[in-house]
Image 1: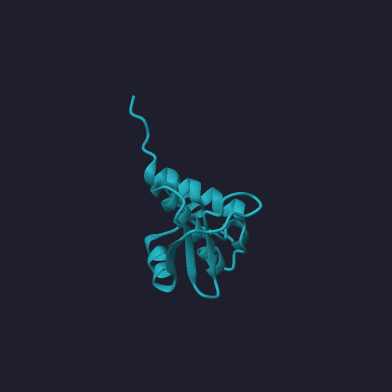
Image 2 (image 1 turned 90 degrees about the horizontal axis):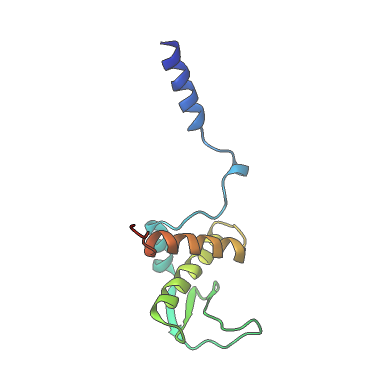
Length: 121
């Protein structure tokens, strides 16, 4: 019985709600996030200018609530760019700042989970 109680106490402590400093500000997109963002923002496909660092694949105008996707990319790149821009909007809505590194990391992780299938030996 003591072992069972110890296991229950340990399990409860492992499931305790993390403190604010332990929770990342930007979390993976959920379907609810996507529906909410796309209900508020328009997605426009158009040619975007090149910038000093290279091709501009996409961008968000938070004032006009528009997400722009460069038409000069293939379907896979456009899908990945849209996902990336959705993360930027979520970051802004959650007051997370606009860390390109964090957005890139979550975008790549989400692409891996959704579209890259593990190889079966």
